[in-house]
Length: 481
Image (tube, rainbow, N blue to C red):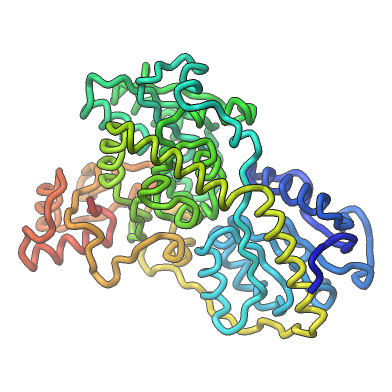
């Protein structure tokens, strides 16, 4: 197999303006890597070129090269981005049309699991491609200096949240952490930095998306955090973003975003020496090393959406923030881990070898069509409101992105607690803008829910009560703590 893509002619599609900021960043890395490696790029969206003149086709975004017009030409490489979750139906139709020599670029093991579930017998060549960190994040000031540059005392605990400000990204749960830390350590100065923009017309899981800015403002007042939390728009310069992240003692990223297939912010934080508290979901399962570069909280699918172990994150924060030794060790391990796996050179090497492997498979005549596929079925019941692009359309694939399942009734921790909820007539409603599940609960279920206002050992309940608790866990009204 050739060792270089120098002078290889690659027809590319979908390299124009990107809808997602993160995909735009990825496009920059792809283009610079391919140009640096000496490949000859032909923009198929602007030029008409015969297939036989090309060595490879690369579909960065859009659906052009997925079409049958290109099925028998040079090997096709498809970049998946977040498509494993949001575009599962599309993949179930088009993956079987690819050949064994065609490639599909993924960024996390969960994506691989989804592809293998859809195509269990034969898959296209899977190119696992962790994305890199921009150089500026390797050059950040030391943490106390970064705090000083932001006019924050070095002794202040700084917690950060960097994301699209959507219910799925759980800014409201970030604020809950700040509230709980403030209550537990009233004498400790705390600063919370939020960087991102609201997206009130985001179409997926739009249960309360348009109301979210007002909801967050009400939480700030309710929790009395107006003087603790500062907001910055998501268009900060990379230098300012890097300095802000370097100043954070912990980046809190409790994402339930369905398409969290990678998460640039986690590796950027680690490169800057900032540990990450995140949900064990999608790409974070691969990038964050539990108790070494941060803390991962268990996640699971319920009839009322995705749930995570909030209490485990709070316990970890309380321990780490009160130990300078632990924070220093975590910071060092973050930098070491990011340097080992997420340097730009690693990305270039992986991308190049993946493209060359597909070219080689094509030359060897390994062109069998994938053909056989199995649909991923969604769960039969959903307790969330009926909205366009609601969770009932994604619950099946979400099982591959979460870290645990409740199907075997194996406790994920020894304690359980009720989620925040309200009662409206006969209905019990989860008080969460991301997952406002609703159900008419029985008197016995309501009684037990009322007993779980604080974490309680599951083993304290008798067999009948435990069965009721498991049903409440399945429905999303109780979580492990």
